[in-house]
Image (tube, rainbow, N blue to C red; front, side):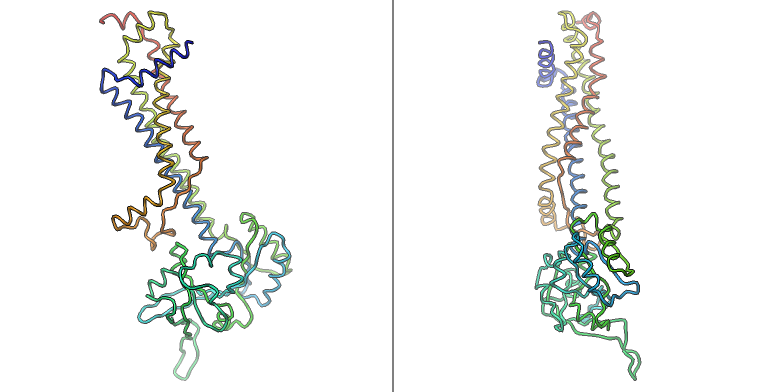
Length: 415
């Protein structure tokens, strides 16, 4: 009965208009501060989670889970690795490739690229390149056709489209009576892909593996073999098993080792942002202290009357704890609601602002990812809400204790 009475009075203090308008304003500001801080923390962590997800997906779309290469940059009998991969139950697919450097020339435009020779059918089994095609098809890379698939940023820089012919120039030269002449070959653009990462869209081009072997004079050798595994987080262990199964010595690598710095930096950034923004939540929550102190001063007469009719100091303590807790709960709930709504619709909101003002928040030539992704994780939301509520509750203790120590005689002396 007593608890219900104290909760009723505490709730009434929250709902009622205070005779002191400044106290009411401070209460509203406390709620708003907590709501804004919780919203910002949810949205920022969702953006960081989105970056981590997009980075992993886009990296794995262009780079295999693991790869095996020869010590001298070439593997003569790559089928040996293919057989070892086929015998490993944790390997889904294997695909050979040829890597090389080249210069692409079209009209007056030119650009250096990494040229990768692939088998289109096998490549689709180890990466998501086929799903990134915007124009043309990856299957157009047939042997002897001398066709090339380039990224959207490279196509824009060279001002080419599907059907245009580009000249591939190699650093390896041909000795002629007139001197050393660079080796060149005309390729037809048969496809344009877009991953959304500038480094790939601008610097990587694909041709058929047989054309690449002929272009780089590698006969039947390849640079390496790419693997797709069943568990991407065990890629390092699996690729070593495959390499040992061949009985030969190879260089092995996996996606975690090649890009580990990206994911470490994201985790560090997420931790730092969480701590910094948590301090903002703490500041907003501790505004409740000033709010309740002012309420206690404003309600001195009420406290004295309650004490004279038999209310114990503990009851007064619970009344103001209830009031402060209601402020914290309303502020936290509002922040969680708006944070979830913003996080779920952030990409469309940002796209609307970009089209409205004609700006680009993430320039493709500066950042790895040109879009602003967002991934809401309800575990983060639960942690943020719990911490905000705990801080809000802790902020009510001192002012409530101050109100419970009010002496009735002193409070009513001048009333």
